[in-house]
Length: 456
Image (cartoon, rainbow, N blue to C red; front, side, top):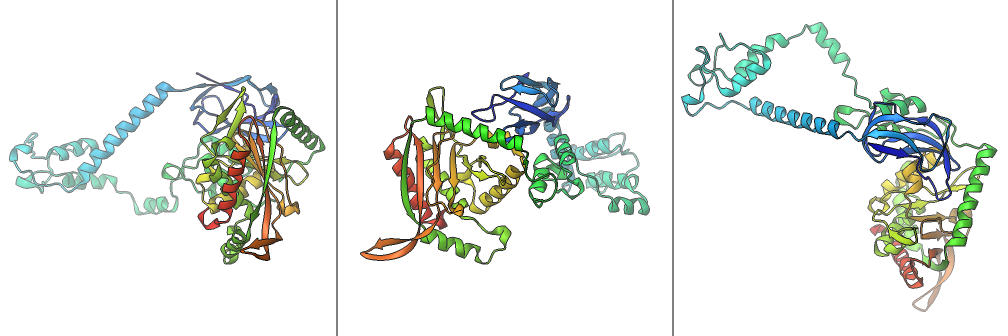
């Protein structure tokens, strides 16, 4: 059994309100699927489950407020079910292999002893097996093999007439292709969000529609489609402001910040970005922020002290590099959802991911892992005209990187003074985990990467 508890969806969260269940008792769910929706001071969060199993019990009703850590559901981890499924899979694979063997052209046996004679009929072993599978009587069949032996092809030809259907039926079948399977979670998500499943392309086995397929369809919607793009109730905004204030007050009182900044030449990055976007449609162009995300993620590989959390009195470095990118809400407030494994994503993939996150942040539809998994935060205020931003670390993280506006500045190079695009980059870091030397190396790595954008 696995007890699923109300997760903490932020350092300041003490309780949440269950909005809806995405599962029912008896549903089989896999690790990473959305089990429920919870309302917090950051908005409505889709909560993922981290164990696979079968839902045995749902202990709370929608509308209830639940403290962090309270059991809200019980799952049967399904060891017996898993074993049974594994056996079925093994049986299926074995049958498919046997079928493949039987469908290969039958070779004449080298030795007449390889042929069996059941009641006067000479047949190969493969033909006998195939006849048993198809329910074909061997008596009376005309064999085409060695010494008149019945082959697999002979058996299947004999079975063919029983498989024939009328021309009208065949035409109707051709007009109506089989409907793809739809997972229960995908179906409920589609119903809740108003997604037409007939227009969703399934990526599962035999075209099965999964949760990810419905989410992709949602991400491709225009912002005006579906639900309201953003909750703008005064109460919700007040709660968010209160949560931000609590987290920042805790940060400044508990975390010994140190601050560094560096001026980064940006002429190569701006030229590369301009050339990259020149011949591409708007939907395929990159923003400068994507270069910032990738550069920070790659620098975290080299300076692991910046990628992790400080909890229970010690630093815990994280293997996955999941920068949280601060996204502003139209009515005020900021949410920095995690971009998982950003160091492994290509720039176009990061751009697509950022667009999707921005849409969902402003619709209040983040997933719990996106709220809790960030390992470092990135804030970029250059588009707002700010030249430098010194961020406050979001606990339990240990660093935040800020990017300001790219502006033309005087630059000395080989005793020549000229104007070049440049930007102020800042670092706020936790002195319990790193020092100024590590921070300086970190900023230097990011700067070097931004001056070689083609390598990102």
